[in-house]
Length: 130
Image (cartoon, rainbow, N blue to C red; front, top):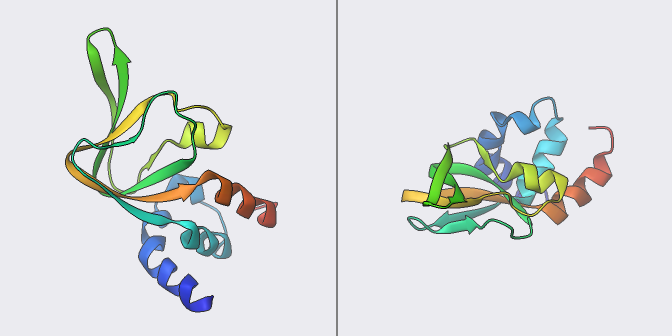
């Protein structure tokens, strides 16, 4: 288990360090979150999720960019562009909502770290006050 934590920490912690969500959290909690993260590669214009889908994950952009898109009468409109060290889908993730917009990899594709909502909230139960 310790080796798994060290490998996960080495790979993921640099990305979590600058994410506002984890500011002020203990190193122990960050280590535990690192073990939960899974790297996912998205092809150019591949969707991470679509509007109204149940939110099961949140993503942290590692490389490339992710576009948040909203439906409009004229078609899809890019409402935000997420770059490395930014999170995608966090509002729906924390409040248990359906996705309020779609998110897709930009034309160059992207690599993200995926965090499962179920695993994260199970972890929070163990850390209580952090």
